[in-house]
Length: 467
Ligand SMILES: [Zn+2]
Image (cartoon, rainbow, N blue to C red; front, side, top):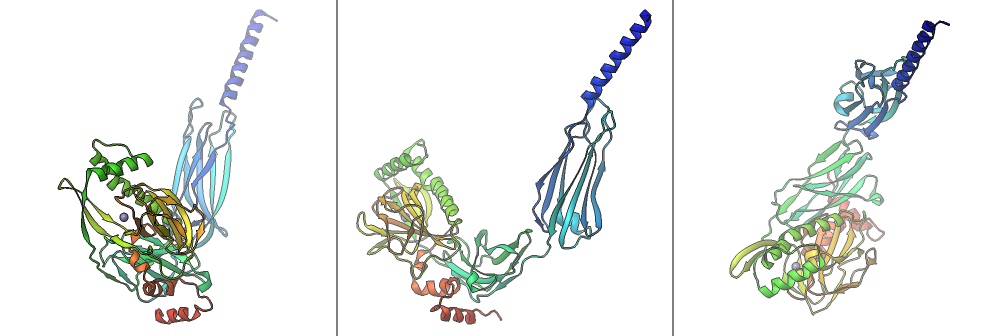
């Protein structure tokens, strides 16, 4: 072999090695991936289906999305991308979103099951090798909103008051209830009363106008929503106005107590800290109570009228509008959303009705507090206790001792703060203490007919016959 031949051979083999190394480096071993970001199995007019397509290697070459049903195939998206230079990467990521209403329904797809097919191919490498993936997912297109039928006839409601409505929804309903202005109340099924029959306890807040819009709504799994009006009449209530004079000793005691039990911090002055507690902490506590009332059990746990604290005197009433004065300066205004009931110091506090203890701890302005869930979104609150004698999760009967009165939290003397909350809205306990009102407004609709209750439920059906 000549010297020249040797050199040529070395040259050729090193080129070959270089080429092999390059093509190995260039080798695209990772196929594209499809990630379904939003893919609800039932899709309605406003539902979104979204997916993300990625390719780690040379990038994407093409993608196609189509809906398929019994032989019918309709392309929704079809895209191809230019090949990059061999040392470059092409498009590696593509996000797609479809609105079921416009992407499929207008493409002449009717209601029912269909498949969504996704086919993605990546760019080939030097060996013309390319990866393709194909995925299918099944969906149900549902463009029909649930049906609603109002069964109860009359709904009288006062400002700060409660009411119940009986109605029937079609089988596809997953959530329903009443909307009063911005407040949304959930209804609960009464399966013993019949297919689709629901009851919803709702409230007109103390600060909502008697003419506030109220409607009954229902939603299905595909997000289709229907709403209908019902016969109702709202009544105004004039609440009391009260002036409260803040003394240094009262402010100091309350601030020291609350700072010791919560994560509130000291402000520039004790008065400022007090106002923070009276305003911001009050708000926070009300949101916590709302959260708990939304977890209420789905059936009625109680019967008859609610109890007012035995031998108690009313110190403050529901929705008293309070103006606070400090050294004859007006410093704050708040609405007192409950009753302050005074009996004897450390008097026994009884549960107003049957239920389940859902909170038994310190709760900001309410101090040591017990919350009792009565079902269907209704809870009662017992605040400022000196001691708590029940535990969370405990079932209790009407009149059972929950603890002792006291002045923990934002309180100036030994008393019980009693509130009732319906799905986050504070309601007037006066109605719930009144047996006649409870029967006529709530139980006649919410109670499941028992043998002795048969009569009253038949009466209710007659009374509320919508025809
Ligand atoms: Zn109070």
